Image (cartoon, rainbow, N blue to C red; front, side):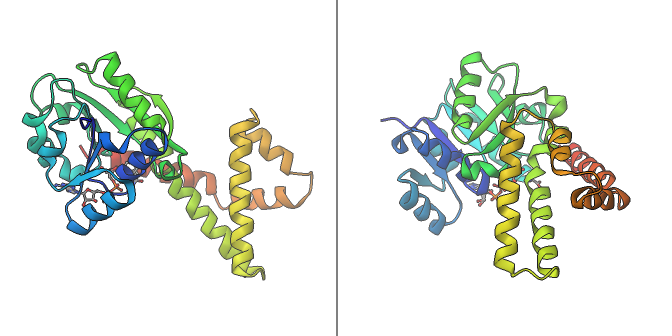
Length: 266
Ligand SMILES: NC(=O)C1=CN([C@@H]2O[C@H](COP(=O)(O)OP(=O)(O)OC[C@H]3O[C@@H](n4cnc5c(N)ncnc54)[C@H](O)[C@@H]3O)[C@@H](O)[C@H]2O)C=CC1
Ligand SMILES: O=C(O)[C@@H]1CCC=N1
């Protein structure tokens, strides 16, 4: 069977999207992954049963979907390397933060379909968030093909390209904010006398449960917060302390910093 999906630069994000696709019914025989080190190539072959190689031009030669998982500063070299080897129908899917469609088109032969994606690491457990923007040359079918692939590892939303820096601040960098809060909750639990493993279990299940309520209840974050906060009770005391310490303002400033860094990376 011909190879149809090439993952170029199979690090954290590309491995997550590839693993999701394979778990979601894509055939390993239709997938090729590239990496630089021999040990990594062997590991990808062994773990996923896919074809793996260090040759990016060979990997894209039969592919109709080419997912680029390299760092933003490595992207130009890869685009130049693969451009002339792409199939006529190929769609190039870039995960690189901050890199515009225009900047990628400039490194590819004219008329190549490109989709800019902002994914996030929960794709590793099938709960990713992918925001996608196609370029002018991308057909409806090529976009649908891309969205189907991404849907195997999470939710997919189409956004305007101007929104990518904001998307990065919310969902791209977002998992790290929650890991930061989880870490702080565990540390505080230990400070209050809990065993570390118990504090970890309590914090994790609380975040999982709160996330499920956000996703499933239909209530807004404010409504959910109000349900935990009894008048004069423990929760309102904690939330008032967060406000006194300007945690909300810190959150806005942090996300502005993520946005601005993304905007500066093209
Ligand atoms: N990690 C994250 O949370 C997110 C990452 N992204 C984007 O995803 C992309 C990948 O990020 P990560 O997976 O975190 O990075 P990573 O460092 O884990 O993966 C990059 C991989 O590309 C490989 N590579 C580099 N040059 C290569 C070449 N010439 N040929 C073959 N392989 C090559 C590296 O060996 C590495 O395995 C980046 O552009 C990043 O901006 C986007 C959203 C979230
Ligand atoms: O920190 C980064 O550059 C990547 C992009 C979004 C999340 N992580």
